[in-house]
Length: 342
Image (cartoon, rainbow, N blue to C red; front, side, top):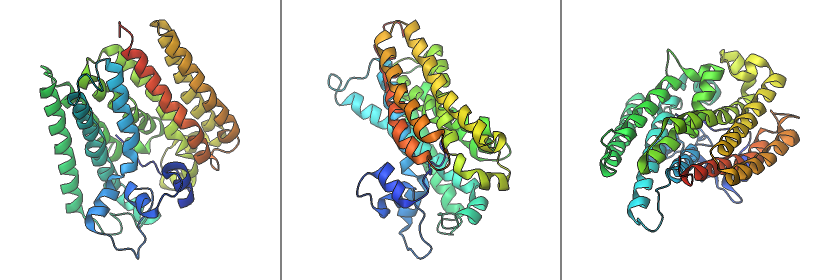
């Protein structure tokens, strides 16, 4: 499950926040962060890559690496190159294949809205038609499922754990984008599905590739995903006017800006603190202390940027706070991987 991560109001913000100094508009375009202008002519393969929004694969790939770390069995050197090739296959499965699939069908089901708000996107502009979408989505989906089955086979899984995770992720991604459920149209359901897609699902895939996935870890990562829900809410503030007009029930629309911004920081901070408490409970005090320290700069960024004006300062806030959030996820994963009972 993935959704569009376009939280940027200008191309300059994309350069500064995502691509670093010197990011080019061509790179932005391929990553899915900049629309193609109506006068621009692009080869079809570039448009198809743009439709898959490679920029949204990055947190999913990070989640896979966190899951591999949590298994306690991933080896950079001792099992070289086997472990490296298998984690790469899991990243391709989770990122380009299934996240790419999700982005393609998400744009297809948003084509009518995009025709009004973003008419130069690949589908409403006519650069990609329905047949192209069906073929591309089908290739990505089958490729992801095939990789999952192959990894199950390579790891000697009697129960096809990775394939079932892939099937579950596909199901959630479909109901996230497609009617009649279309979770993205409903604040809590859509934002939680988005949060879980970037934390729980890729973690499960990475850990299941190199170890066993316990019920406890499933529940812990689902809880951690509530922090991801908070990050997803951040993306909704600058879309309040459009969401209201289209009848989309984002949390800022339902609760208003002032209430929604406090819900956002409460979910981001509260569930990270809950993970700190859990780490203490399993005897991983050192990792718990590191995670607690990583929460502090996030709180600072919230009060400096987000709380005063979540609409104007969302990009500044995410650029300041999200690196500490993702490092915190890795910290929790390493704690699991180095804990003899988990």
